[in-house]
Length: 490
Image (cartoon, rainbow, N blue to C red):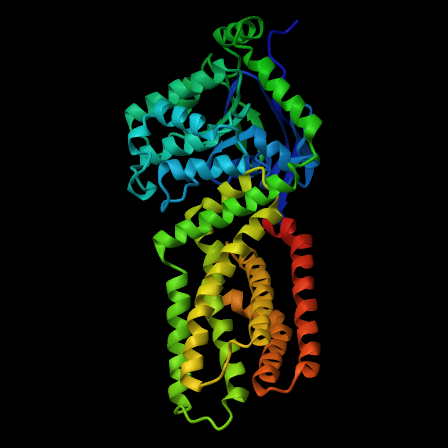
């Protein structure tokens, strides 16, 4: 009987195309519990695509990835709970402290007693002293260690390390070697990408190479191409002894199969929404990148319109609705493109997508934060227009029109912001795509506001209000249908 533990990762006949280019060609391999596999390959060989597929960030055109007994295609969201990824970028929020980053991800993974786990990891990785320091002040090595803490926070049985040696000094490399050894001893399946054969020899039990999308077993040093006797002994001892590393890892994935598809319930879903929204607001309070821009634009635009009309409009109630909604339209675009754009630029969007959270929960968390930003902008804009044009925008029906219009605008805008997040021309592309979709909403918003300010009565207001309500319902229904597809493109 073979003393090799059962595989935790199993890739079977994976193929992936981008247009006419075949990136992966019939790729099959496995990584056992307590085994470290190095994946080598030149840039463009398909390593990143393969890792994205295993991490559930992309789908193969053919083939399947299995984690223990669970096919990734059947339960991707739940399986993310059992995978830890250290990417080439740290996937950390530089405006948050080290501890705040880990607390945020602990909430996404819905961990019990997260503070104990966070303290243990920070002490182990020698970051406890800097736990309350902003990540933007961390060195490359410190950021990499915090990224490792993030990946191991939920104690996953499968760990993916994408070029973990990049930018590390000699001491940090030694710590990385020790960490990989500890993961092996605890029965974790570890997949490492590296350009260095020396690192592969030091770290791995086996090595494979991707060349032109095909997987090749490497010849070379005795330590590569076959499992080490020491590793087999460690695994055998772990199964019999008190640590139960590989056995525990397989049990965890068997549990994943049992609970796959059941979800975490409404309470866990709402906690995820709140965690994303709170993180965005906390980051904005420190960065001041969105609200300040939106507020300054709206107030200055209102003043310019007021001066253009020389403050003597005969019937301002017919002019102000258009001014109000035009300012909201363009002021909102300034903030919306940053909703996902900043996440994409800093690499943190990938960290969000790696979490076992419904994509719609991430979307709603972003919507909630954006609604707050819009509320602040409008709270400044309405009094300015009231003073400049002497119109009462504080009528209940006018405020209802503003609220419903904002909810629809933010819902559509957040969805399109996600769609254009990774596009370099997103600042131009977002309004080009979004404005035609918003036309019915803004026409109705202007019409309803004009009716209310002109005092024409509720009979004329209700049709406009109905159109806005139907628009809002359609926007969020479509968003929930499309959000998973859109995330696959980001």
